[in-house]
Amino acid sequence: MMRHELYLENSYVSELETVIENINEFGVKLKNTIFYPRGGGQPEDKGVLIIQDEIYEVLEIKKFSDGVYLKINEFESLSVGDTCIQKIDWVYRYKLMKHHTVLHILSAVVWDEFKAKVTGGNIYEDKARLDFDMEMLDNEIAEEMVRRVNTIISQNHRIDVTFENRDKLKEDSDLIRTVVNLIPESVEIIRIVKIGDVDIQADGGLHVKNTSEIGKVKLIKKENKGKGRKRISVGIIL
Ligand SMILES: [Zn+2]
Image (tube, rainbow, N blue to C red):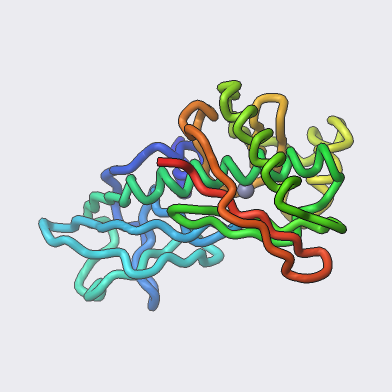
């Protein structure tokens, strides 16, 4: 069975036919959606729906308690059960996926060297940044961290996305336990993103399948945004 939030199990579906499952005051809910709503520093997708030969631009994406709804113009005339073809802007999304994976690698590299926690972050089409709780960050350190990120990228690590039961995860390694404890007790099934033997996180974001897809990254800048916020911005070299 395909999940309603299809992107969580397969981030590579860029076009999919489905049906309208519900309509609320905000917009339409699709049976299976490939549109990612904003979350975890990753911006929402762009794209269109094609319903009865009409093209509707997706204006906004919002998660409600019963699922993801897409805001489009004049949806009042549509009905539950209508067939709908969804198309996301794949060029844009794929760049976000690459940068998301890059940030996980960067967080692993900085943790490995400084045991510094991530205190913030954001992903864009052309760059991504993370803030770290660390004492000192100069250009030399930032450049070295990016060098290590590039080394890991070049090792062609596989990225695995799995859905695990909270109780099973508790029995696993210390790292996983720490990660899992940050998630509310009410969440029983936890999505795990694992990058080879480099990084493992509970994460709702979208990633590439292999680090070989990323290419190479460069340091864009390092900034001191105050206590506990040493910022590293990186971007994929096109
Ligand atoms: Zn993430």
